[in-house]
Length: 402
Image 1 (spheres, rainbow, N blue to C red):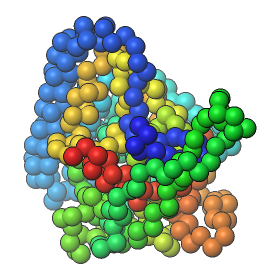
Image 2: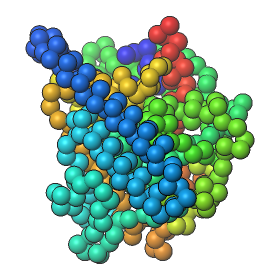
Image 3: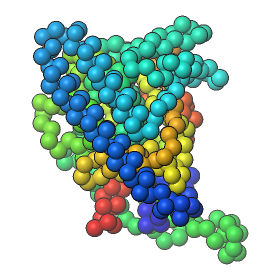
Image 4: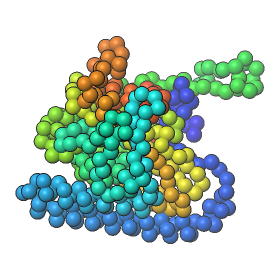
């Protein structure tokens, strides 16, 4: 994939925007089992589609009758949303989803009971040391990294939240195409022409200018699933000025938790975390609650018979249905784990020290805190890529496929 080397992280040599591919081998067995895998995948995908239709009919249509009684509407819609989302995860290949409440302190983690990993309602998770309850209420902000449809379905199952998407400034979108790799500018080693001396490193791309985030717009569960892999500017074409609101405006009228999914758009296997500026500068930190789900180390590498759960490159049509079909063709179940940050370490805590997450004159405290917490709890290395770089990558990627 040298044609995408301009998007290689100069510090690690990783190309984080590309989809992870399994190692070569066992091609004959893969071809021999293709009819069985495709048949199973078709049946499981149809089951997922049926669940989506049922959700649209029951939650989006029938349950609207109960809107005059808000508490009853919330309970009924949450029950059906949790049921359909958990069954969808099961059909995709995730019968078991362990959850941890973790702290920034080393060696501090709470593993819930086995029954808490499978039930279809919202369990109260307690920490054995602090008797902590991880149960966000109406208006609480949940900031989640966003690698695939799995996070969105799990969040819908667990919290039935209000999903919001960032909206970038019009006319300043980062849609510039990336240039090909530069000629050799550095040759490591002793310049003998062999070994490490023969490895060339292309020059790094110039940093993509940051695009201001004007606010957020609410979207449905289906809207979030369709936006997986996209960038903020790619999903804001049909927005109007009345659709764009600040976080405080959305939280003020929310009757459920509010999820801000950071479009990480990077490969989870490589343990790199880009800084994604998706929150307006100066956004308040008080009363925020954070969720880290799933973290980069939670995914297993793809194999010949088990594709990656990550979905970094969106499809031009019916996104993310083709990716879901590829997941359902697996003959083995997937494994991942979800981590929830201890509320004692969240910005809503009175012991949260803002200066630990700011450097120099950085005024984007919320984005910096999110990126630092995700990197620290997930044990990933931060790189300088943002969603603006992802926009340039997608432009270059699509131009090469024309």
